[in-house]
Length: 237
Image (cartoon, rainbow, N blue to C red; front, side):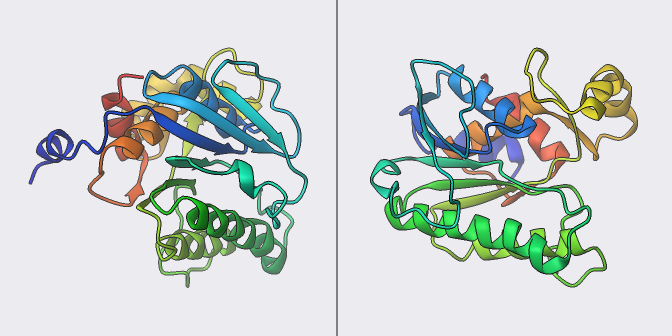
C-alpha cells in the first residue's frame, strides 16, 4: 500500500479536535500552539504549564501548574480531549543519567499515564528528537532515555502514540521563543533542505503534522524529518 493510498483511506474523524499542549513556553511548544490555534481542524486548546504562555485566544484555556509529577488537583480539567501535543523537554547537557531520566522519562510517563486514564481514546504526540535510540542500549545517554520513553509510551493504551524526531528546526517567523541557532537556521533552511533533507524540518510542518496524525492514521509511529514534512504538508493548516 502506498503512503498516498494510506492517507486517503484512513480518515479518522471530521470533527475538530480538542487538544492539550505541554511546553508552550518553549520554542517547539510555542510553534505547535500557534499552529493549533490557527487551524480549523482544532476546536479548543488547553495549555498546561508552570507559567503563563502569554497568548490570548478564544480557543485557548490555560492552567498554571507547578508539579508535573502530580495531577490530582487538575485532573478534573484534563478531559475530554482528543489529542495531547507533548513538547516539554530539557537539555541533557551537564546532567547525570538519573537526573535526565527523571526529568524526561519519569515526567513524561506521569503525564501520559494520567491522560490515558482520563482519555483512553486520545492520540499522544511526543516530541523526541533525531537520533533517538529505540534499542535503549546505544552509547548516547539522552538517546537511550528518549528511546525508552518512546517505547514505553506505546504500552500505555492510547488510541495511538506518534513519536516526532525533528532535527534542526526552522522556527516560525514572529514567535518569541526561537533559539538564536534556530533563527540562523531559518535563513539557511532552503539550502539545508536540499543538502540534508533527513536532518531538518520546519516548526510550521511539525505543528501541522501533529494535527494531521491526530485526525488520520499514519503508517508508522515514528516520524522522522521527511515524515514530518510529508504529514505537515498534507494538513492544509
